[in-house]
Length: 412
Image 1 (tube, rainbow, N blue to C red):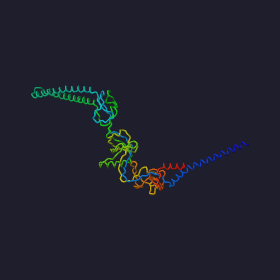
Image 2 (tube, rainbow, N blue to C red; image 1 turned 120 degrees about the horizontal axis):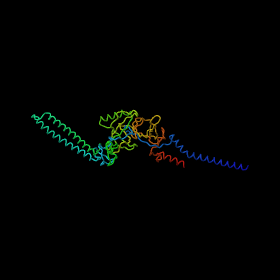
Image 3 (cartoon, rainbow, N blue to C red; image 1 turned 30 degrees about the vertical axis):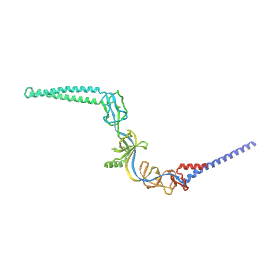
Image 4 (cartoon, one colour; image 1 turned 180 degrees about the vertical axis):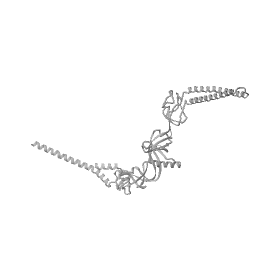
């Protein structure tokens, strides 16, 4: 009996200690969370200024730019092949270098073709000598026929023989010309100017005109082009501006940017528009041309293409980061003179890089919030970077500083 009482007493003491510990932990946690909850509540009520970053709207010229993903294509791509079969004796080009049209690239063993040319020239001389002899006999026969010394048939036969030799000499001349042409084909020259690729065959190999790989590939890269597609809805406006620019002797500028869109690679012009719309995608292809003097563009390279359609002067622009979207459409937070913000619906115009034109709802010179908008509501008080309080000290202007102060209050 006495043992049971002792156990009950010990259990009661332990239970009381657990309750006191739980209560203490609860109140300590509540005290630590109290400043944070109060801070958040004050922010929602507008009692505590919200640190924000701002920018000033201004009137500027805005470029109307259409962006698309494009593919760089060469103006010409030619597989260099031999036109006669033979053993490759010399390779005179350096892989990856620029070559000019007509530049000597390689040589094939010319000796078989030299022998064929010599043989053809010998046959031509032989038949030409026969022609000269036949022409001399014809002249004599014509004199004899004038005195009725020979029959007319003999004269006609000699005239026919002369024509026969003339035809033979003409055919021999063709054989000589062909042999000389084949000999010239042993010197392989660049058909176009451009950058030559890797060598596909080594010296000593037998090459033929029907070799699929050829000797190398030349791509014309100066100038170079880029193909890109835009929605068909944009075609009328672009076509009208292109026609107007051509009448005035101007061009529509096109920029090529890298895949990330952070580095401009080349500046060019819109060259032409395709003659039909792709019904599967509802887009139409455009072709731009770039001088590519520095070789920044390579064939089959993917680039971000920006087509400058027109430039609109005197539009109010704001950073794109200031534009927010809600159920009623786009809006901005405008900072007033009393350091409060007003939610202002706006109508947007064209976007140029990190700037957006605002056609209605914003005036030049007004300040708009670009950072810290997630904690704002209409009428909320804000603090701007570098603003000083009434006591002369600089106010906190970042959410990071505010959170650090809250932690210090909790620790205290």
